[in-house]
Structure formats: structure tokens, C-alpha cells
Length: 509
Image (cartoon, rainbow, N blue to C red; front, top):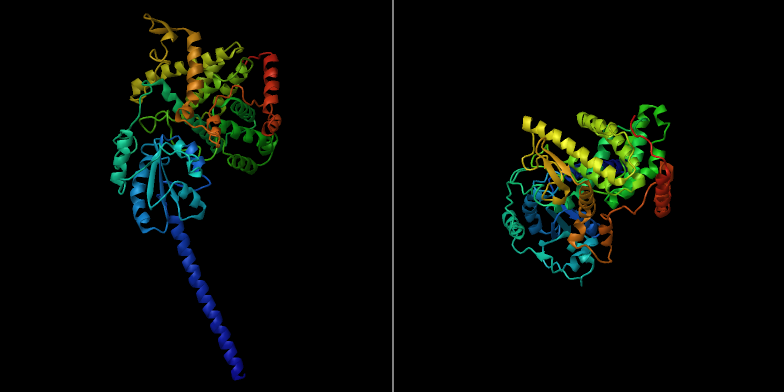
């Protein structure tokens, strides 16, 4: 073999070895990078915002205040400040927050080109720079530099976690501490202190709706004998849920329900059943980031009190005061079937079923159904008051009680029967109270926050307006397709006329 050929072979071998080593080295670095990426920010609590989600996140948060940190990822001071900011964010953000729903802690990376205009409109002059204000005041302020920002303040004394939290405490009149633990040093108002607190429950009805849907799918509870009751409940949500987001999400589920969950699917194998449950799980019935993992009005002072059951009761009451007369018996049978088939607490489900079964006359008036649900809830509370007293399981800050309290509705009380300690109610006044409490007051929060204008924030207000005259899904999931194609008005008239002309049927044999 010639010398030239040997040199060529050696050169090719050397090149191959070099490329192989380089590739191996690059692969090792990429693996390390992937590992580091997976572990990066694993303990981040602050919400990352950018120009595309800034308005949406701040508009939809239930928090009363927001902190927005403008920073640059290349800034050494910002990297050093991040642990301080996260210590405070831990208290307020996420499903494990110590004090959820009070302050939303966020950050915006001004070094990202997508956020250049957003940072300019807030006149960010140094990094990090912190702003404080009601979330609604941030909405669209970043895209309108001329808009007044008098309610948005620069936090000029928050260089450490202690100083930032001290500044927040001064603004809110609170006494939060960095070492607060969940359900300790709580700032909870008793549910007997102010009837206006129910406005915060508008977020809880969204949470309860999404949580119920997750439970149904997680426990694979959609069967051939429960399918119809879920469809009817979705119809009720599309028509009368107090949150527009949940009405819209329920309609999307309903539109696709026949395709994803056909009547003959149970004749196939179990794998198809699992695929259907997974496909339905892709729908966000009340929008992104819901469930949030915490409760507002329904938050208990202990981890195992209130929460989902409270949120579900508020949802049922809010539906009961939004229906019309012709829908009353449909709403009654729908709620009874839903609780019976999908509420996973066996004893609670049985008690509710017994109360439903005791109804012998169909409901013809929405008033009668709303009062029946109110009375049923009070019967449940009467039973639980005795059980929790004997077992010591009551929430000390939120004890079960007969509702409404006299200080909330004096006119609801006619007299108290001293012989059996019963209450004689003025049911007309009770119904008026329920309509106001679970109707207008429940959805008043965004109005109180002052969200208005023609810049898209009106949509947030529409999200929470009463839905009595809104869309109504006709009976049958097939017609629900029309809901998604904007035929809501015509369908509402048709469905209600059908309901009113339908002869009432007995709901329980």
C-alpha cells in the first residue's frame, strides 16, 4: 500500500475520532443542560408574565392586589434578588400558598424582545423594578402609556424579602410573616361578618365546577347509566352558570360529547373507555388555570374543612336562582341525578338522594325549587351541627348554621317557636334574599374592582354577569352544536317554550 494511501486512511480515522469525541462531548453537555433545565425554577412561585398573557392573567386573578417585578435575566442583581422575591411569593401564590387569593406575585423579563414595549410603557428605568396595585389597574395599562396609572405604585423599599413583606403589610394593614405556615396566622373573615363576602365565591363556583369535572374523569364515573345525567347537568351549566368562562367551556364539552362519548361506546373494550376519559380531560371547562388549587369564600381555617362541598353548594344555589319557571323541574331532577351519580361522598350522596326522593309533586315555579334547595341545605346543616358537635370536627371559624342569619335578613324571620326551637320563615322574603345573595351579589366583585373600558376588559365583567337571559342549550347534545355556532338566542326561546309547554313529570318514584 502506498504511503499516500496510508496517510489518507490515517487522516480519515483521525477526523472520524475527532467528530465522535466532539459529538460525545456535545451530547454530554446537552444531557447536563437538560437535567439542569428540568431542575431549574422547580421552586418558583412567582408567575412569569409576558406581553401575550399579561392582561389575561391579571384580569382573571381573584387576588385583590398584584406585584409585578420587571427584571432582565442577564442582570446579576436580578438573579441575586430572585430568592428574596420567591420567599414572599411562596406566601401568596400557588395551590400550597399560605395566604392564597390576596396578592398575586408576578415577574416580566424585559430582556425578552416580546416584552420590550410592555416594559417601555411602564417606564422601567432600572432592574429589578417592582410595581404594586389592584390587578385590574394593570390590565391594558401596559399597552396604553398615556393611561393614568395613579393606582399603580413603585415599591421603593423592597430590596430584601423582609423589607418587601414589611412594605406589603403597611399597604394592606396586615401582619404577614415569612415563616407563616398554611392555616397559621390566618386572615380569614368569619362567614357571619359580612354578607358581601359571597362575591368572592364567584371564583369558588369556577373552582367547584372544574374540580367536579376532574373527579368525574379521574374516577372514570361516566358510564352508560350516568351519561345522560352528565349531559343534562352540562346543559344546565351552559344555560345558567354564573361564570361566562364556565358556560363557554361547558358548551365546548357538550358540543363534542356525542363524538367523544357515543352511546354505543360501552360495547367496546375498556381501553376505549379510558381514551374517552382522557380526551374529555383535555377540555378546560372553566378556562385555563382553573382549578387554581385554593378557595376564596369557601376556604376553611383547617385543611379538611369547607372547600369543595361549600363551592358545590354555592354553585347549586346560584343555578337555582337563575332558572325560569318552565325549567324548575328539569333543574331539580338534573341536580338530584348529578349528586346521586357523581358526588363521591357516599353518605352525603345518600342523604341528598333521600331528600330528593321525598318530593312527590313536580316543581312548576322556580321560586319553589330555590326554596326547596335552601330548605334541604338547612336540613343538612342541622344534621351536621349535631354530628360535628359530638365529634369535635367543626371548623371553629366557620361553624355550620341555619341560613340566612337574622342580621343578614331580618325580614326573613316571622317568629321563633320556643317549644321546638324551630323558625317560622317568611318564604317570600327568603326567596328575595336568595335571589339577591346568590344572584347579583355573587357576581358583583368585578364591578367593585372597577373593571371597565372598551379595551377588552369589558369581557372580564361579562364573565361574571347573571345568565338568566343568556344562552340555553336545548335538550339533547346534538342540538348543542348550534350553541357553538352562535344560535344562542333562537335556541333559548325554543328550549324555554318547549320546557313551559311540557307537562311536568314526577321525578322520583
